[in-house]
Each structure stands twice: as C-alpha cells, then as structure tokens.
Length: 440
Image (spheres, rainbow, N blue to C red):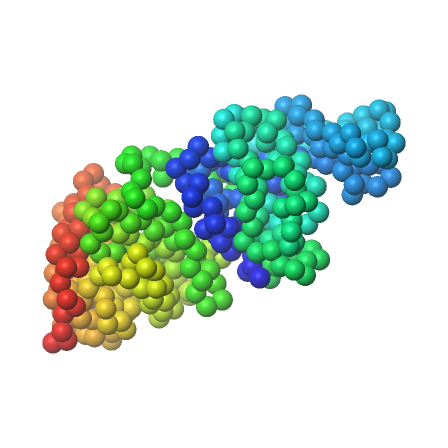
C-alpha cells in the first residue's frame, strides 16, 4: 500500500538507482503518472517530460485499443485488432482525428510553448502510477521507440502478477515495486489516489526543470564509487535519501536538513561533496515527506525529527557496507536540534556538526549530548549566533564554535559555504576516528 503518488514515486526511484549517470530521460504518462515520474527524475538527476499518448479505441468497444498516436505524427496501429474487429479506414480516421485534437490540446497545455525533450539515443524511463491492462503503457513504450529511444524501461509502482508476459517486447526492461496476486484496480493500492489535475502536471514539470538546472549547476565532479537514491521505511511513511560511499570510506555522515531544505539542496550537496572528497560517506535524507513539510507543526517537532534520525541511523547500522563505519551527524536549522537530540538518545554517534543550526531547540537534551560537537554560525547571523553561544554553555561534551565572517544564515556569500564545509570536514575527519567521548 502506497500513501500517495509521491510515496510511490520515492519507492520506485529506489528500484532504479542503477540508471543514475546514464543518458536518461524520464517521461510520465499524464496525468497520474507525472507525480510518480517526478520523484524518479529527481532521484536519477534526469530531465522530466510527459509522453503524450492517446489510445485509439475501437468505436463500438472504446476500451479495446486498435492503436495509439503520439506527438510529431507518431502513429502505432494493431493490424491484428483492426482485422479482428473489422474497423474500416473511415472509422479509424474519425477516431484518430478526435484523439489528435485532445492530444494537441494537452501538448499545448503541458508544454506551454516549450519543445519536448529529445529521446533520440536516450535511455527512456516510461513511468505511470500503475499498470492494469497495460494498453496505454504499451503504446507509450512504442511511441518512445518511434521517437528514437535507444532503450526503453517501463517502471510502475504496482502491476498484476505476471504483468511482464502480457507486455511482450514493448520495453527492454520492466520494473515494479510490487506485483500483488489479487489485483482489481490501481487505486486499491493507494491510500490517497486523488486525481491529478492539469495544473499539477504543469507544476511538476516546471519544478523539475528548475531543480535540475540548480543541481547541475552545483555539480561538477565525477560520481563516487557508490552514489544512488535509497528509500527508507520509517513507521508508516517512506522517506527518500541519497547515499554516497567513496572508496575506502573512513566514516559516514548523516545529514539532517532543516525546514525548506532537502537532499537536493545545493548547499547540502556541496558540503556532502567536500566530505566525500575527504573519504567520508554521506547520507542525505528528508526528515519529512513533501506533504508533511506543509505542516509547520511537524517542521518544528524536534522529537519527531530526532526519532526519525535515530531510525535512519539504525538502518545504516544494518547495511553490511556501512556497519563498520563510525557515524556523524550534520544538521542545519531545525535539523541541527534533531541531530543533537538524536545524539543524546544514541550511544554510538561519534561527532556532530551544526551549520546555522538551532541547538537551543534541543532544550534539556543538550547536557546529555556526549559526541564532540562543532557549532558553525555566520558572523552576520546575529540572532542565531547568540542562540548558539547560549546553547554551548549548556553542553558538557567537547564543543567548539566557529564563526564564519561575513556569512548570513544561508551562507550564500562568496566563499562562506566553502569555509563552513572545510570546518565541518576537519571536525569529522578528526573525531570519526576517535571513540565516542565518555560522559563528563
């Protein structure tokens, strides 16, 4: 059971991490497939587009597909169905003309004058929110091939048992998160299966373009030895993360983001890259789901955030390639308070770094933190600097405060984020090799 299409997309993305770094384009089937495809595209660092398909239904049995049409005049027909049903050329032309009008309307609405993303020579991941009969998905895969895709991957959160046999060779690879035996309709596997509107489709496409441009501007290095998206089941929700493990890693730093940030934040990714270059593994994950982030009470529920960080740490400890690595926490804003509370609750956290954090929100837990803690604050972030100084006075563990001259709260000034990343790296490199400090 998926909470909603966002949850489904996050879990599907974890099944496709091996595609990251390849020449990928993710295409969603409007409307419901687009929210799922958006999460996959974010995970793979790939562009997102829609693949516009209109089924050509037999006139007297519309659910039976005798073909499909796509953009740029793409036309795929099933000679077998046409012959079996006796549909004539005029009837076929009438159906195609009607569906072409709707196809063009959607293309104009969704693209708003922007050109579609070329698929020539690309690995095209076709995504929908599920497969039932498979007719539309098959048509979409055929359209992707007509547009020049070098390889087609059909990926869905849910499909009936044995679904790939009925799909034939429509795609080169099939991926499904779950294939239940009892399958009546796609919606039965979603707690929230609210229809997706045209406006939502457009927002997802716009958001994807903006985020991808920002991420690519921040990136510039070759991918490390292990670098991919993971899905972490925590209670009744699934949160998304990005795990990076360089060769010969000497420790792992788990990021706890603050309000309005995520694993895709350019600032967090920049700091993570600096840590990776120093031989430290990193796990950037979202403390809240996208829906939860809209609830301000949850954003400031430090106990909830800390509890999730503790569970993520336990997940790290269960992975064979990470179990031997000392763990550090890197927190920003409210995430810093969550990191400190989690460190107070846990007994194996080797170091904590707070960047522009709110350690004061950790309250009475501050004296219980044993892990060496570095507080990094911008020199121009006066209110937060004062809160950090007061918090430091309450702490009993080895603690240091680094003030970055000229930096405001988000460290957007030239050179300030690099200075913060350098200080964090030095702290982690030093303390992740040391045993956790005994309580004073």
